[in-house]
Image (tube, rainbow, N blue to C red; front, side, top):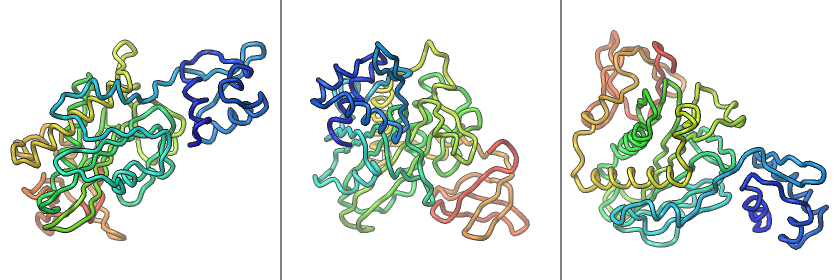
Length: 328
């Protein structure tokens, strides 16, 4: 995003009126050029109202990400090596994967106000309206390769679920392998990507998307969804920077415990949050489908399905799953 456009958004983010003259002076452009830039904000999902004699105003205040506010709320042992905040990026995961510095034993955290090419599992798009939700990627370099990383994305999902519960969100659950639900509606998702060798140098990137605010842009999502705003009373809504800090803190803390072998049994941590427990499910494997009863996870975190063919395990990379009893 061009710097003057972002400065315009930063100025309007306070939810107050700003005259065309004042904005023009701030940006060093004419009032007509200000109007053009205001119109361009629709491209990222921001609508600006104008009132004759008062100027331009956003319908509501936007809390933009602030590096200092976030860092101050993360404990020293969970501080990332670098915290990068981007106004706009194609994908925080792509940015983190291509980050040039070495990240041995220290996490990189990348936040964006919006993504133009956000990704979900199995090639799906991740809808990313500007300035309302959490688009976060955490990355680390591993000297011992990618072996044993099967559980990592599930631990991330557990950390995000526990964060939401910590804030007071009710009926939080996890749908294998890493969708986070509240009241049986999707509220967050995780995408883990890796590059490198099985037993050598590698980089792992964890993408986390959380719906913080209800948005018209989310109407296009092809499954029931909800947001933190929807789930919490107005009096207890978290500040966006505080929420980002808490997610970073909790994910780094729990994933570091997993990587050092100090985490508890994943099955023990997953079971109380398991959305699929006791449900009939259907697995999609390419063009094929498997129907059966969900029977939990293996030690390798593969899903177990029972039908007339017995109990069979399936890997997360091979399939997607939905419940045929329940709402998802």
